[in-house]
Image 1 (cartoon, rainbow, N blue to C red):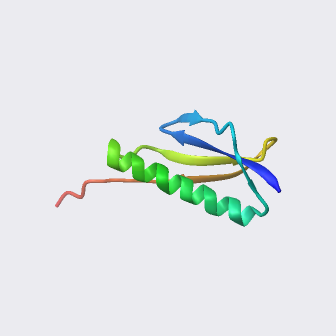
Image 2 (image 1 turned 60 degrees about the vertical axis):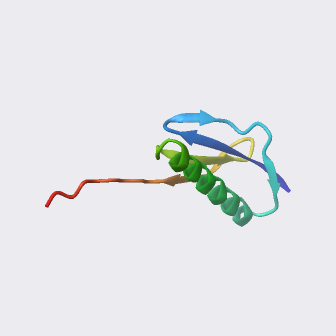
Length: 78
């Protein structure tokens, strides 16, 4: 199994994951990254409104995956 680190990026600020989690497949890593990002976005919206958010996954040596949310809001004038 490989240890992966799920660094959180909020509004341009990176919070590195110091512990990581072990997974035996990249598919499982993708699922965990998606869940982590959904939790981050949910907390943002409930607490203070949405900001840019991403989960950057690395295996200790290299970045292997980036999961991000693009949130746009635009007023539609009549």
